[in-house]
Image (cartoon, rainbow, N blue to C red; front, side, top):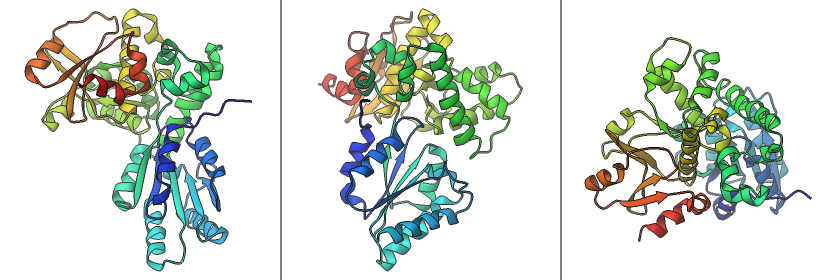
Length: 384
């Protein structure tokens, strides 16, 4: 029998059960990380009526589709748990949900509970902020981390850094060509084709696809927008590449980490450090050199910090640099990743001159497993 491992976000959903009557539950995260599977397992364990629908399976091109599903739930039970997957595919979904939810609150005739799932952050966050403020609890699903990958596939740290993130791909690890095809066709192309190009206005789609390969070739590197634009086989301005990065970030494929500054406008104006949100997304050529392996190691650390919900930046001044800067638990952490790549050792000393209360953290191959398992706990233990 295949081993069943519960995604971490289900634990948070269970904790929220007592609030289902008051708040819509919104589960947001990348494709193919177990959102739907975990949610269906959750529904099987619930008492009472529930209905599950996916906008991915339907020609849900009209807002009336949502109203029809709501009515089905009411006919099933006045307290039915209604689940809508890939909610961002439905036009004007947030206003429709707002109207249905608010009417229920006013009339008090039904107690429909609502769980929404989505895999496009930009589309969902816009709808949530514009129409549903104060009406929802947000639950973040992430790529599979090291601990669950190890539990499912007995994956070691090196394997996780190279291949981790998408549990469906783990069965193909002994077939490298099939594994690469799965990541390219079932993950990346599906995200680009279904989650981005169908829902966002993207100039030059072919160039957009080419940009993804280039972005994944610079794991954990701060690189200027001008240089990135120069890698594309097209002329344009830096606004184009910024837009592309925003879209890939909104689809949970990468994180553009900005330079640490106490002044927000200076931070956003900096060249971003590009962190793929799991090792499986990194271009395979990056693993063919010592420099590339070091960058992938550094990217795995960054992704673990980001997926733990921490606010992550980097810092650089001339030749002095700090790989990651994190503000958490009332402390400022300066994190240097000792990955084996050649670099200046001036960064930490200079950063501590500027921020003497910062906690210096060194991540090495000897302790990285502890960080990957519990990033917040790792920082907390070293803060004292």
